[in-house]
Length: 474
Image (cartoon, rainbow, N blue to C red; front, top):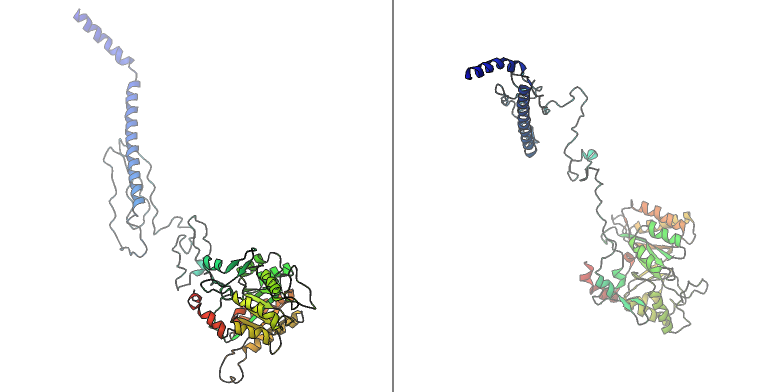
């Protein structure tokens, strides 16, 4: 029995070998190759990730940095070789000297051949060496705009954080035209009456509107001083807008108190740097009455005139004082004008008088007595409202101011005269003033000042101003 079974075994054994298929062996070989490939790819991936991470963390040691001198030669790192039967890896690039990428090693028996890894480009030999290269690197240090070396200023193009060209640096802001008073001081220069009028007044700290609202200027400059005031602004809105926006800030503007939205226009003029005044409404037997404004008259009592004056004061805020437009019955009558001047003085306002007479006794004497800042003008520049006449009058005023005073010729002294002219708001005057101011910038012996620079302040006035000496330094 046992012998028969053994014979059957040997009998069937060749048949089993003949019927065997290579599928099982091939599956085994396939699994083995897949495992080898997977392990190689995993090892290659980890190695690349590690090297890339190191590249991001620290700069390569073989790349030059600004200010660093590289030695002429450095030892090259030995090429990495794979053990027999393992993966073949490309050799490391040279440390400093550029060389073509090493060719992939020959495939060894039983090893898997992988494509060579891309080599980093050498600094010494840029890519596309056969193409025309820019003279300067595409990424370069930007010159310091504050550096005294401005040779590269034309190529300085800073970039913003988003990569777009940065806007040009802002110009330094010009000095403010007016004092930036604390809100409490501004509020305390307004008195609200029982009937709702907002009137100017002297603040408890001593601020007077004619000083607080005056345009600032530098007194240190040429002795010759010239100024301009445009009067009766507000009758024509387009011309008023042109005067505010186009005339130099040194031109002072005197508004009609009946101007619609007067307070808005006063503030707009100040925003453009203009010192502002109100025209004092006085009776004018030969002139038109102002819109909605009852003038001060010699035929009414003092209380009625004060009521009309206060109604005019309440039309706006931020003005320096009043302009008396011409010598007339009111300004020539001390009985009528004394109560008016007293109210102006007590509220800290200034007075500008337009009077060509050699002597203007009433208004001037009252200002000296009551300590009011005062200026008088006798030059009406546009009595003939044509461009040629206005140009000639502006040039004549400038020449007179620039001349040395009598007795100073030949002594090298500059002019110490001052004068200001007045004009009406017309297109010819605006155009002439713009051109004249451009020429005046090239006249070193003449300073262009606002009207406050032409005020005079006598003894009583100076006593009031001395109380503000500490505040005037602000």
